[in-house]
Length: 390
Image (cartoon, rainbow, N blue to C red; front, side, top):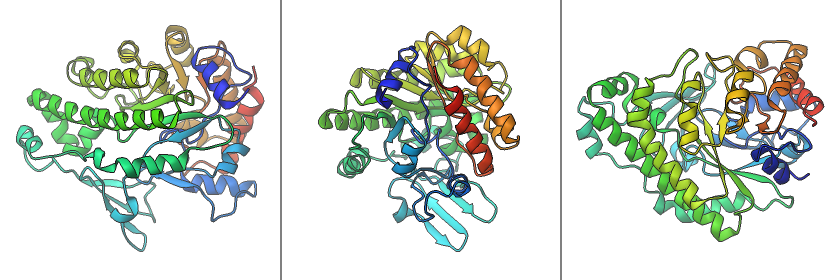
């Protein structure tokens, strides 16, 4: 089977020839440049100067070079903008220190001697308690002005000779996460309690920005004749922690889910063939029925160590409605800390639970982080290759 056939069968809850493998199809199923370099050097590949393209400098993840993706039998390819538009024009460096202000006005800082990622240093709407007034003076980036640049960027990403399963990836984080960045954590949670109306306006503003982006992506797919190749749209919002949701289900349903439902419905209307991939870390089982009702088809990262997220229960209760994309091995407790044999055993265990009947795309729980030993990366990959055959 081709990658496109394999992913398409899986999305239809049918068993293909093997469990599909995703690496770097999205910014939440990728790998850090450090982990990539050490893993490839462990096997003598590739040359140091060819370490792929950075797609999210804030989270420090890359898309490996095409020959490596083929070597690893990766079934997915990412289509979309970088996390920060026009990165080279925005970033300033001084030795190991790097600073950048993104297109939303968020300021980030990283010291490569000690930091794994960029840290949020300043939020554009954090100065002041009146969110309504702050929103009145704030404007989201106008993506229509970036149309020509965006289409040229997407043209660089497409054109592979073999049919691939393309994943159209998002332009920004979710409604909750973007709002946290705009306001700062303390302000944001106080807003939810004291000014829910303005909080909802902020969610609406971000949802409209997403609709503008997905309209451009849909236009690109139509003009390039990629309707049969782009099979997944990737969206996100981190709603859960290790033990519970970050805000109450009632607040999510009253404030966050209505604008989320609106932009997801727009995606389905403009791109009716695609399946919607939704990334939300943590303990989100309580709102999975809401996800399904809003049109979500795929759950990622399937953080099975969080409360209520046991794999057999998820497969039993939601396996007919949701494809599980991720959950292949836990990054926090296994991939970074255990021995290779333990990693391989864990991969076999998760495959045994999630693969039967289709509906499972293999990826670890979130990105392969900088602290993952190279031998563990290869133990994961070899276990998938060995045990992921139907």
